[in-house]
Amino acid sequence: MKTRPELALADCEKIAAGAMAEARRNKWIVAIAILDDGGHLLHFVRMDGATPASAGIAVEKGRTAAISRRSSGTWQERIKARPEMLKMPGILPVQGGLPILADGTCVGGVGVSGVQSHEDEQIARAGIEALTQG
Amino acid sequence: MKKILCVLSGALLAFLSFGAMAQMPSYGATINLEQSRKVIAAGQAEARKNNWPVAIAVVDTAGNLVAYEKMDDTQTASVQVAIDKARSAAIYRRPTKVFEDLVAGAGAGTRVLNLRDASTVEGGVPISVGGKIVGAVGVSGVTSQQDGVVAKAGAEGLK
Image 1 (tube, chains in turn purple, blue):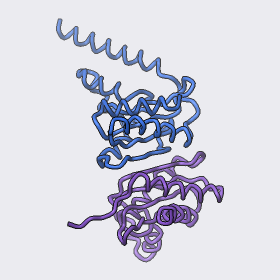
Image 2 (tube, chains in turn purple, red):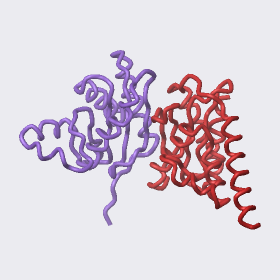
Image 3 (cartoon, rainbow over the protein chains, first blue to last red):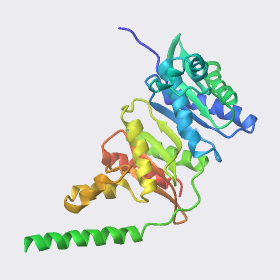
């Protein structure tokens, strides 16, 4: 039987703390969502002042990364050549969502929304680094 | 005669639910992240004490997510159910148990099944600060009655 790693709540707390630290360092106000490899929400925070819209966007970016096992930014690039991919279910093709990799497998995704898309991704990356290095 | 009684009890129910509505506190300033995390921590403390794996969602007065945590080994369906319960409690300004009881009472009470974004399962309660509703907490993972215990503990964690 194949076994695979699974994100525990304690892992999510590390990711969220790392991401929030990166956001605060830059004075960025964002929402941060962490999902499992099936795209189900595990952990969520919306910093004071972040828009209501950022809640849903963060979750969808994270879900995109989690279930497609690639960054939502990759999808943003892909649809330029193939706009028909906009109809793909569960895909929000906007940068700011990254897959979480552990032992060479995708265990979930992090989605961030609130600032510029590349900054959102920078926050997501800091979160994942807090898990893998912490 | 029976029919009249039915109509009368329906009218009474409508009056009672209107009366209950009139007592609902107003919305205050919306809950912030720090407060939301306190609510989740208090809920989780209650859940851990009982060995109940649950998902806990906290939403603002508009029903939008502010904070959320799913404990290890919580059933997958509870992710959305917890959020739905919190949203219902926030936008209707009353615990989801109120709707559950209305449905259980059958008759005219079942009309709440048709209310948009209403949850009819116990486990969602408004969060109040200084007599004003600032948001709501929704819990799912164990029996709805147990979910309600966790939600109550969470909401009280702010007091």
